Image 1 (cartoon, rainbow, N blue to C red):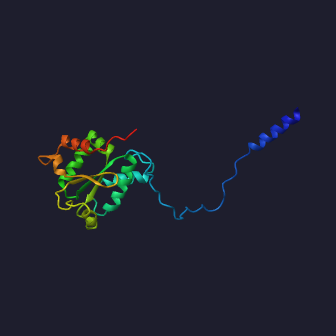
Image 2 (cartoon, rainbow, N blue to C red):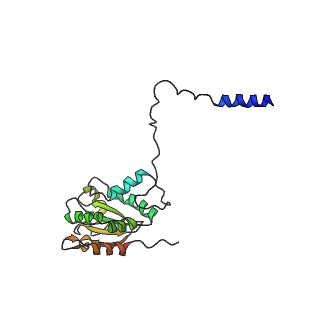
Image 3 (cartoon, one colour):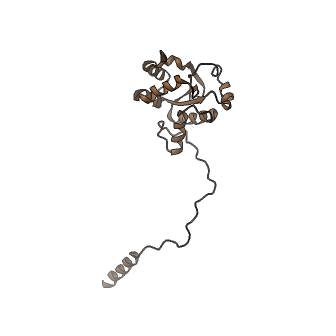
Length: 197
């Protein structure tokens, strides 16, 4: 009986030893080997801004951040299509430029009012396209009338980028200022249908 207890005690004492010291020498370099880019999984349902990867969050947030002439409208639309498919949303292309006062006023109204912002985020991926950027001209040519219409000009697209509706953003204004009721009605009218159970 003493022998098994002695054996158990020896085994336990061997397990309770100190950890091995960290390797000595210079620190190891950061892995700089080329990595495959992350590809968004369009089959995963998400809410806008609640994507699995931080890169997705940043990409979606940048779509509607500002009218940036350095952004590619075609690339932004591809990003929006992925998010729209994942979240069962529609896409709104807001065509304008940084000098558009009505565009800025519309943005301030939406961002400043939680109910309007929630309606936007729940049903749409909102993309600002700078019409003044020469690089966006070929993209805009695919949407007849989009270059001549007064800014802001809104295009509602399905998740595959097919145009469902086009209208002047001025229809959301009253006396040159954003109208809460018209903005809400636009979002309610063009929100995607509820997902089938």
